[in-house]
Length: 129
Image 1 (cartoon, one colour):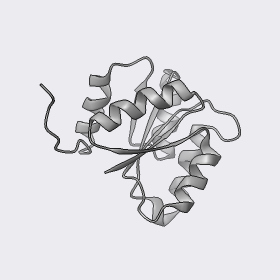
Image 2 (tube, helix red, strand yellow):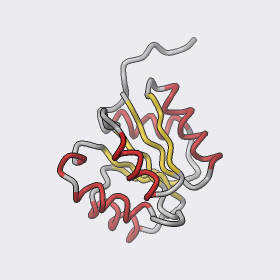
Image 3 (cartoon, one colour):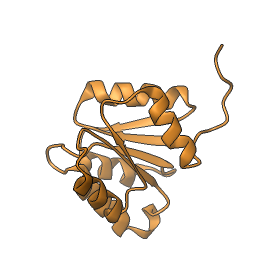
Image 4 (tube, one colour):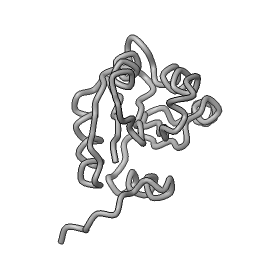
C-alpha cells in the first residue's frame, strides 16, 4: 500500500512517514497541497491514503481535499486530515469537503494506527517484538 504525506513541516512529514512505513506503507511526501497534486499527477499507481495538514503555504489542506474530490480518477484515495486545527467547525468543513478522517496534532503513533484500522487501511504486517 502507498501513502502520501502532505505537510509543510519536514519534521512532521518524517514523523507521519515513519508511522506509516512501520505500518507497511510505501510513503510519498509533499510540502504543500500544490506539490501533492503534482505528485499525484505523476503517479501510475495512486496512493490509497493521503495524510494532509490544514495550514500550508501555496495550497492549504482543505483546498487540496476539494481538488482531489473534483477528479473522478482520484476519488478512491482515502483522505485523512492530520492537523493542529481542532475546532469543531474545521472538522465539519474538512469532512464535508471529502476527508474521511481527522486526526489532531499532537498525537501518538497508536492514535494514527487506530484511525488506519477504522478506515480498513492497516495492512497485515507482522508485529515487531
